[in-house]
Length: 94
Image (cartoon, rainbow, N blue to C red):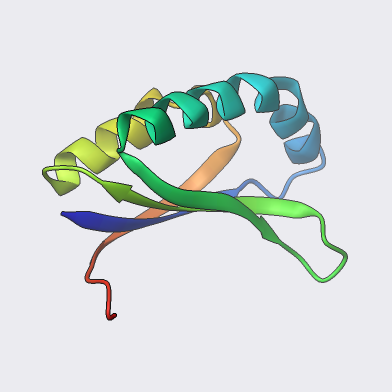
């Protein structure tokens, strides 16, 4: 089952520094998820000045609970980068 994950960063002054501090570990985890087939695609959400303010992912997992586990196990969650997460079932159109 496919799920869309929208994870928004905090908006406090330290938010960009928290993201930068753990970004390499986050990308390493993303590569592992991609290699395993669980991450279909993903990337950073940007504001008008092209600053990273969150993340979007499409994951292929068995359940919403598994999608939530993937999010919770990411360093952006444990590192307090992501402050708000939304997950929706997704059906590819074409």
